[in-house]
Length: 514
Image 1 (cartoon, rainbow, N blue to C red):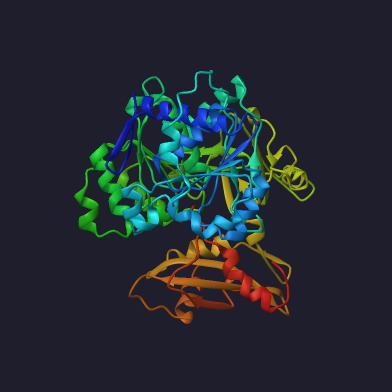
Image 2: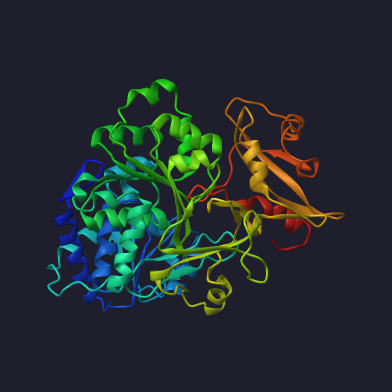
C-alpha cells in the first residue's frame, strides 16, 4: 500500500481512494456524469488528486487548469471546457470569481499549511469565504460511492497558449487495450515498468505543477498504482534534496530549468544530502542545454533519462543517459508504441539528416480532439501523425534530434535560422544564466536576430562580449543584430521561456502580428 505525503499531512492510497469515492458521490449529486467536465483550478495539493480521481470514477473529464490565468483567460477556459463544477483553493477564487459562469458549482478548498507557507499566504486569505462550499466538509458529507468506478478518461489538458488561446486536448474514454498501452508507455517514460509487480518500491516527488501534462500523468499513474507520492507544493531545489533524503525518493520527472536551479546550489549544499535512493530521473517539456545535462549526469549518475512528446501525441521517444552520451543532443529513438516521422512541406518522409517537421502518434491512443475546435484538430494532423510544431531530423542510428519550434524559426533574407542552435552556444558562455533568441522585424531582411541575455547574479556582460563569444562557433549571419539584457525571463511553469511575451513589443511596434 502506498502513502501520500504533503507537508506534515499523510494518508494511505486506500484512504485517498476512499475520499475520491466520496467525491464521486458528491459530484453525481450535482448531476455530473460520464462525459461531463470538472475544472481543477489548483496548486499541488492532496485535494487535487481527490477531485481528479473522483471525477474519473464517474467517467467525467477532469480539466486541469493553469491557476495563473487572468480573469479573461479563466473565463475562456471555463466556457470552452463546459465545466459543470469548479474546485479551487480559497485564495485563488477572488481574482477570477467574476469569470465563473452562472450555474457552475464552486467547491472551495481551504489552503493547507504547507501550501500557505510555500506561497507566503496569510491565514485570512486562505480560509473558505462565508457562504461558500467548503471542500472538506462537502466531501465528508457523502458516503463512498457503491457503484463500480467507470473507466475514467484522461484529463483534458489545455495547451500553453503561447501562440494564441489555449486548446483543450480531449481523447475518447479508455478501452482495455488503450489502458494497457498507456500503462506501458508511461511506465517506460517514468521508469516504473520494472517496479509494477511491487509499486511500493516506487517513491516519487511531485515537483512540477500538476496542471501540466507530464507532471499530471507522472503523479496520476504513481498514485493509481499504489506508489508512494510526496507532493512538493512549489519547486525549491534544496527542499527537493531534503525530500529525496528524508523519503528515499526513487523516481522523479523534471524539466531542465529545475536542473539549472539545482546545479546553482552551493557545493556544500549539494554534498549535504544523501541522494543514493534515486534510480530514475526523467526529463522533458523543454530543450536541455548539453552542458546542463552532462553536469546532472556527473552529479547524479547515469540515471537521467529523456523522452520527447506532446499533449496531443503522447510520449513518442525515449533516451537513456548512455544513449545520450553516445548521441549528444538527441531526444531518443521512437518507442515501440509510436510512429514518428520527419516530413517535408508536402507531407513526404525525409531522408536521414534532412531537416523537416516532426509528426508522431501512439498507435493505441486513439484520435485526439481539441475540445470544441475541429478546425484546429484537422490542422494539427499531418501525414501519419500529429504535428506539435517541432523541426528536427533523424541520424543514421535512428535517433531523433530537434532543431527548434516552427513558430520560433527565423527567416532572414530567405535563410532559415534556428534560434535553438544559437541558444545552445550561448549557454556555454561564462556568466550567462539563461537566454532567449527570436526574430524581430527588419525592413531589408524581413527578420533580424534578437538575443535577450540573463546574466548570472552579480555578473556584467556586454553586447560586444556576447557577439565575440558567438563568433567562435556560429556563422556570421547567425550573430544577433540586437542584444538586450534582463534580470529574469518570462516563463511558463513547465520551464519553457514565454518567447511570445518577448517578441510581442517588437512586432506590435511594426504593426504586424506574430
